[in-house]
Length: 359
Image 1 (cartoon, rainbow, N blue to C red):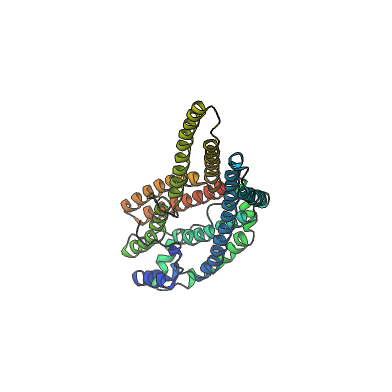
Image 2 (cartoon, one colour):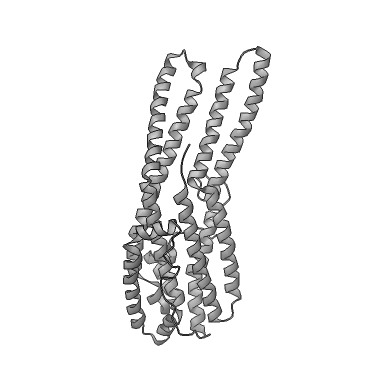
């Protein structure tokens, strides 16, 4: 993955990205630079990020409060006579109740999570609309660039955007509900194929070079980002998060077994229960439960598995694209790419809609 990967550069959101792309592919800027779609995408992307943060913070906070409270409670038998511990127990009890209320509120309403998924769905459909247009309307775009006359394409694109607004943007909540319930009434393709054929000339080759850079290569780089494996804190990828949580869980389990053995030895040697050791064992058991809860709620292992499958598909398509010798062959590979991107979006949405942070 290139250093400094930036999300959403494929849509040329920033002026600097548009300037750099325009310097390399000036003849195709009229097609790749879609201000109308940017105006739809940017507010939806901002709302999706905000809703995701709100949803994740509530879930993690609930788990943290309950975990700490149960750990404090584990030492009740050992420190029951201490005056300071009474205060600690009261604080722990309040934290536990607060954690339960936050957790149950999230389970019952799930408003922030549903808003995150709705806005994420809308963002990805906007992205798909953009690149499906560039792939399926490639003959029209290349011809317009050859004639230096984009008026026909721009008029058709404007009508396409209005149809998309009425079909997807306005009823996005209903469309997402159908998708999640597997009554998929939303076809993969948002634009019809353009009937003309592509010439195998330098202009067509240049056009597909631009598409490869912004769509295929960007998706490969995005997936590589999701599969970063080196340890980092805070984690930057689902794989890093999965490794961190799995490491904490495995270490806690080993320590729990070791303390269990130590406790048995102390019990046998002293003839009394090793209260402190047993309290530490309860704390470790609670920590293991919390880690498992976060793994399930954040869907880190599901994300890693899905991204690995997606990465393999993308790399196969990239190899095929590099070996393609005709414009039609390149277009066919990019058509398959769009279908693969749609399937990845569906898997992501369904996985996170079914996730629950339940401890």
